[in-house]
Length: 385
Image 1 (tube, helix red, strand yellow):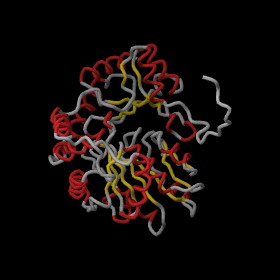
Image 2 (cartoon, helix red, strand yellow; image 1 turned 60 degrees about the vertical axis):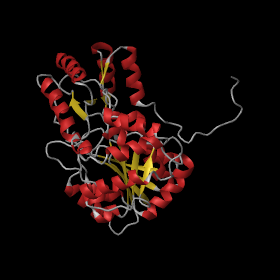
Image 3 (cartoon, helix red, strand yellow; image 1 turned 180 degrees about the vertical axis):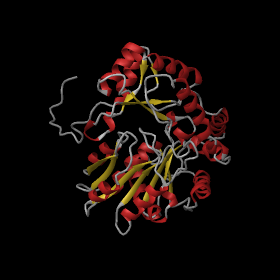
Image 4 (cartoon, one colour; image 1 turned 135 degrees about the vertical axis):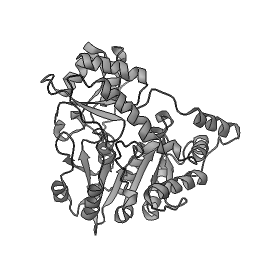
């Protein structure tokens, strides 16, 4: 095709290639075991798939309402009330979305104006900053400290100003696996009190916490809940990331603005999947059993690599585990991750790409949302390095 005569100015001129695409492509090229990208390599519950089929056969194949079907929003409201003690109005305070990424982008588009500052805690999932920049906002990056990624609250407070429009948090945290504590949430609530700052809380791994840790949702804390858009994911929860199903909750005033953008972005979300999820969520065990399910996988993997040269602290949440390779090589994490694919046949994610200024702590991230067979094969390779 003949090149365009238009002289385009990109909204995202320096957007790096996705590390997920890069590592998955390398894994395919070298036929490597792929424990890099965060998706399960096993199927969802057959019961859930049957419910989708049933909904399709019953004729739920046309547009759903803009905010989602009421039965699904109602059961979500019941779930949040059960777990976090906060009551959201299903009609005016809950929206079903095309996964959590769409919810995050829509929230930023609806509420961040050009030159507004948005605080992002690094390392951070890679969808936050592009969404801020595409809407004319300014990401203000604060690095979490050490190899366990703690929050420096003094640094956090020092970055708050009258220009701060939004703060984005993620707990349980991808990529580190850390979990915000009760004291963290109280400190955050104290920092934001008496401001007009909006909190965008990415809680897609809310049901995947281990070792008696508790997920501290922004919904649990009254002042935080009053200023928060909380995003969640059915895809992460029910092993169906390809369905791209999520939701968000927020006070009616914020949700009204959210839905103004949502309407002209996607309008509505897959109807038969909503029907299926509304029925499936009626059994709380379907999400309450998720922590023990993934803790068993985590423990299987970590037991299998206990004699390796990697150092690790068992992850507290998500289905990701960090491995410290500082006693193995002085290579950068990017070079080491590439060599693991090419020489050892295993794909992982280097952490520096998520850090402020690409800080390299000699850590890689692996995903243990895999079958036992895959985990044991990966552990065998890791132990041989």
